[in-house]
Image 1 (cartoon, chains in turn brown, purple):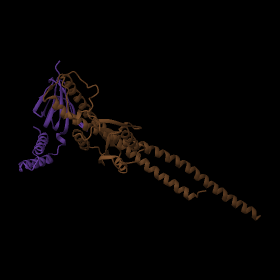
Image 2 (tube, chains in turn green, red):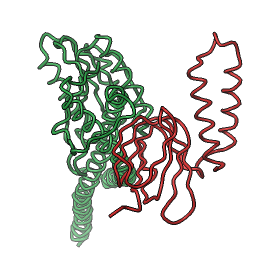
Image 3 (cartoon, rainbow over the protein chains, first blue to last red):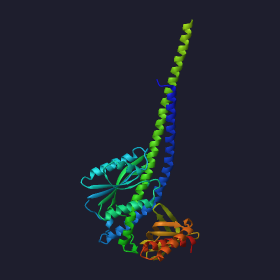
Image 4 (cartoon, helix red, strand yellow):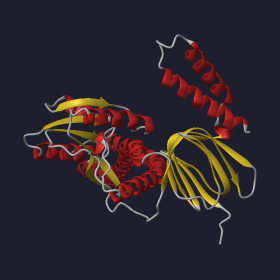
Length: 288
Length: 136
């Protein structure tokens, strides 16, 4: 039977853990709120960008000669680049391992094609530093405060390599923030840019200050950057949400463990008291 | 019925800077400044670097420094996607002046050693900031 002191020590340690997980949960909740706000703030820009590209593309469709741009070029796919967006820290449930599992599947599915990984987030960098996959670049400390210029740097590098023909496709793998309890591991194509689904032709005959091709040339790179940026924002929000859920579960578990341990402690305490009383009583009886 | 107002939206990647009913708006295109009044013909164009000025339905003129992007003009709506946009009260005038000085100096140096395009852009950006901060 464990001694009372051991049990008390154990209970104290579980209590400490519970406080840490509770604090982490609250910190994540605060960070999640901020990350969600950032996602909402980025929405007007990305929606408008999407609509404008739709308008320009629709205009091009009228003019028979389809608009062409290096970023739209479909090629036979030999080399793929995959942007892997992971978290910066652990203790967030299956957030990171989901990404790595999906990356594994992606690589396996691309039999005979070269897959290069571009890693964002410290967890991915750590994970792949011990593995044999080709890594073309790593970015750490990017999700603490998601910055548009970071997305710009990452996206520009990918666009440059795509245009120069080093890679024929660029995909992005990230956890999409669905809601607090639910993150969805998503694989999305970044390059070549796919024609916008149901390009909203709002039927307005626009005048153009510049040739439409030129305008499109200015808008398309922005769309790639924005896609990466929004993906990063989403992933950051999802990471905080995942951590919050994981820490909430941990806090609840700690509570359960505490309850059991306390019950056990009391049993042990009572048992030892009973034993002592019996000893005293029987000792007194023996004296008579 | 003729409209009296335009819905002006200015968005940068991480936020929406302006969302207001305005009576008129002027801003730079890559080909020069343009002024928009309600009922303007639909237009798509690239935005340059400079000062955006709008007149709210009530209240004084507002100035914004904007840099790069694209604009969609509809009869009752102007929507601008800007690379950067700052309201006059967000601009650090001191910093903009320093930046202008530095960029000017760079331009005066022997032109072989420097990236003239970049320096000129820096000058334009700094001038836009100063212009927006000081008003007309």
